[in-house]
Picture 1: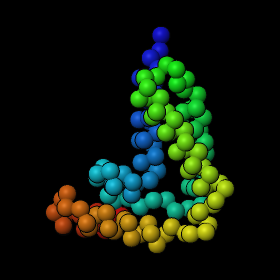
Picture 2: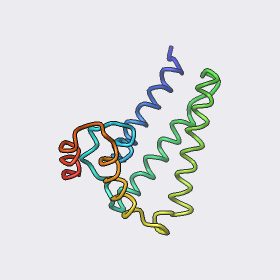
Picture 3: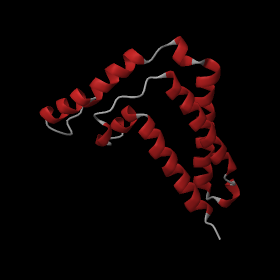
Length: 132
């Protein structure tokens, strides 16, 4: 018999891992320094692929029966569903990327994240920036 709590935990982890992989600046902001030398993929195809990923993830989270989850996990499930709906709305309806291009912000954030945090010697952080 399956354990809904464990299945939900696996779903959360899989979503997190893939979303951070798709958004390396987010990984850096979480302190996952394996992403420090990567920039996001700025191609329009990546945005389209993100929408497909978000839609698939939304379907997976919606498919989880909340009755099999603890009250805390029920809240986590609802938060995931509503967050994914918001992100899809922003991308598909508001189309914020067309109104306010992110490229200048992305470059600034990429530099700031590495330079403002003292997790490693400056020389090592500058190497990450050079690769990024």
